[in-house]
Amino acid sequence: MSSLNGVVDTGAEHIRRWLGVLRDDLLTARVDPMPPSMWLRWLPHGVVWIVAVVLTIVGAVQLNDQGGLDLGYSMLLGVGQGCAAVLALRRPVPALWLSLGATLAVAALTRRMLMAGQIDGFAWPWTAWAVVAHLLVLLLVALRVPTRVSVEALFLTGLFTYALQGLWGAWNYAPTGQVTVALSAVVVVLGIALRGRREARAELEQQTTLTAEERARRTLLEERSRIARELHDVVAHHMSVISIQAQVAPHLVRNPPDELRENLAGIRQNAVEALTELRRVLDVLRSEHPAPGERAHAPQPTLGRLEALVENTRAAGLTVTTEVTGARRPLPPGVELSAYRIVQEALSNVLRHAPGATAHVTLAYGPRALRVEVVNTAPTREAPPSAGAGHGLLGMRERAVMLGGTLTAGPWSGRGYRVAARLPVSAPSATDPLPQDGAA
Image 1 (cartoon, rainbow, N blue to C red):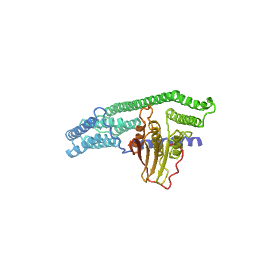
Image 2 (cartoon, rainbow, N blue to C red):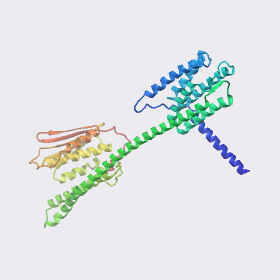
Image 3 (cartoon, rainbow, N blue to C red):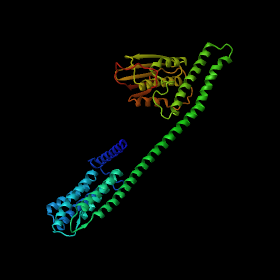
Image 4 (tube, helix red, strand yellow):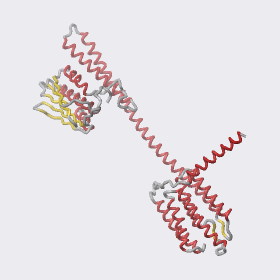
């Protein structure tokens, strides 16, 4: 007995679920507008409107002349069936119910005339114009709703037709139920096929777009890997050789002077730092999804390391002085990095192009901006030829513009040179963290 009760409960649960699915599919007023055609744009919508107007007029005339109904009833029923076709452009499921409701009203009124013998041989329960209108509604439903709902709409049409013609019935009429159900099945299958074709085409276009994006991404990664390989094989090799030679050189000279040892130590230190920066760049190039902070072992420099940069430049033979004005405070990581790089590049330019000059670095903290200024005096001797490509100023200007700031560079005080940048920053906050040597 308990097993039988379990089977009954399981069956009841399946029935409840099935009825719930039917309720969700067919008792809804969900908006599902018909999209414009790819090539014809809004032409199908115009065709549906024209057909709806024609069906309204033809249906009203047929009901008035052949169905024996008053002109007012005939126009009302014709408008109902035509409105169902138009409504199917935006709300397909409610349009299905409107079409069935209008057909039911026509069948009820004309059945009374048939039973009274006032008309004979009238198409019943579906008139010719009602069949065309309902087929149009079913086609628009099948084009936009899932296949399950289309099949349910077809089943509902068949059940409705059987209830009218098979169970209710009438006298002296031309039956149209079998033809209507057969044509409805053909239209629903056609609509499902067209909808499946449209979805397959959209999925194919999406896959094509994804494939093109993947191909472009792969090409970019391959190019970045090639650049990283070239940098590793050429630049890193030469920098390593420079570092080793600078370390070995003091041992090749008997009693080398302290100045030579310090210069060679500075050369080796610069080479090691350059290799560290190069490894960080290589990590970024080789990384498929580089993200801020994911390289904890290679932090980006900030203004907290500015003194180390100045000391390194002094060790290379350049006299540098610094000045900081305003209340020093933590700045956004991008501003910190850009300011550091601008000072670094400006001092490197002084070393290359102004031998014997002195440089002065100024950082001015303002409420809305950080001002960076690097000026140098006139060189005391002729600068050696430089093999650089002249991208230093361009890089500094790009960093400033990227942050919404400005950068000017030009002659200053005779033969000197001045680089001045203004980097916008947000207003200081009491909750801002102190600047760290974390990745920016």
